[in-house]
Length: 216
Image: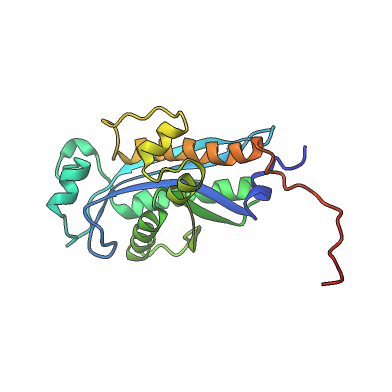
């Protein structure tokens, strides 16, 4: 069946939904404390849906700055031994391995981050990969799919919780700012946007045999 391959939908890009909880806003100085990633797949009927999930609690890197206001906002205690946290290199290598496997299986060429306010997550992911000395980074160095912008277009909302509400996606505010929960909701939201465009007839692109006006 045509137009049911993921590689045909996004110009060979492999979308991966990411959410990162941090100890501040500076990717060079502040630490990743949680990271979650969800890959996506196209089913046999050409509808986008979530696929595999990985989530890690992450140890702050050495000499990183832990802003009290950021920890109060996300409710993370980096020193809690029950977090079972891992170093950022291990977390990224595990996620990158899953992503590279998905790229190959889907005949895609490169991964692209899907995130809510994607520049933030992209900047932290890239800084951490550089810091860890990871050379095989499967993600595009600057391209992203930002669901905040897409939700502003489709639903008139840019806040994740409000966009989910507008899309009739259940959202529990008590679980918000958990990397895994926010990633799950962002993945569902992104799939809804892509699938809604398909339902409305916007994809596959309509074919036209009209010839351009040569008189202009």
